[in-house]
Image 1 (cartoon, one colour):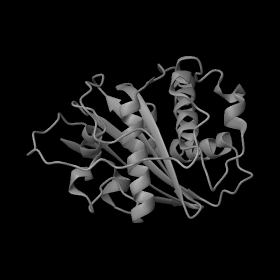
Image 2 (spheres, rainbow, N blue to C red):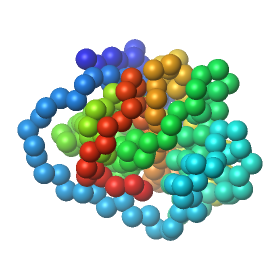
Image 3 (cartoon, rainbow, N blue to C red):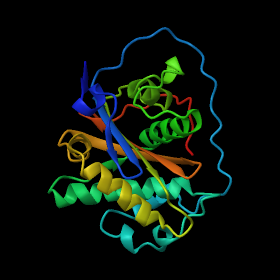
Image 4 (cartoon, rainbow, N blue to C red):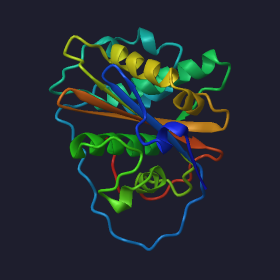
Length: 232
């Protein structure tokens, strides 16, 4: 079963300054599909990230704004995607706690799914929940399976932002994405949904346009399987 918001059905999303937004929710059990080989995608960064994933155990929605890493200016030639992904994750939990909801658990599989979709939207010049250029990655559930999730119940938010230079910090760009999502009814519902359990975020930049993706796992915790795609 697929549930689509009005903005997605209209296929045009919502337009803001330097911003085009759309949202959809996929909440369906895994479907059995014929097995096909998919070539792994290299996701090598040009610079080593200053953010380590074990930091998710010590940094949280209460203290991330005090972390010096997130206050650094973004080098637009070598953005630290792993750091930006983490900053958005904590900002989502900040919003949930403000609404008296439980913070979500980090899931690296969801970060993989989110980042690879952001990367492909930027590189293939499209903005949609559906990737019509790659049938193996057509919808959020397809991408979740490539990221190592055997039981995807995925809600996905996407956004695009432009016009940020080297004087922008990771926190500032994060807050801009979060404000955009929180000011859109469908996106806000995904962020504050009571059935959401886990979250991973991904951002990719091309030609000074930033593509952001949030992937939520609803209803049941992730059951991991072997992943085709890799972490950024």
